Length: 63
Image (tube, rainbow, N blue to C red; front, side):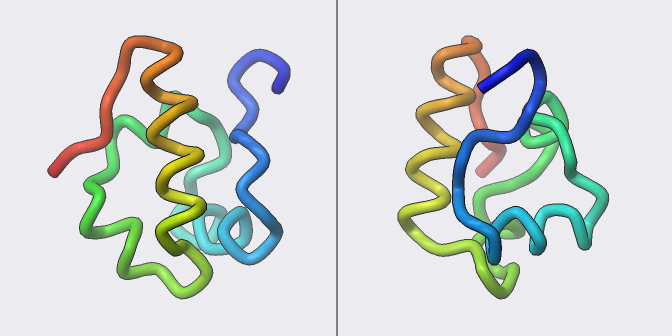
């Protein structure tokens, strides 16, 4: 993963995030876990990868 790129979460999840304007990892910390799980294409696997990527940066998803 280069710079602020999103982690590799799969095409459906990446498209779902793009649909709400999230294209960089720093934008993920502004999102809630509940909101992300409500997106079609974002499931437990994508959420786990997002959690790990944010944790590596010292950030967390909202509740």
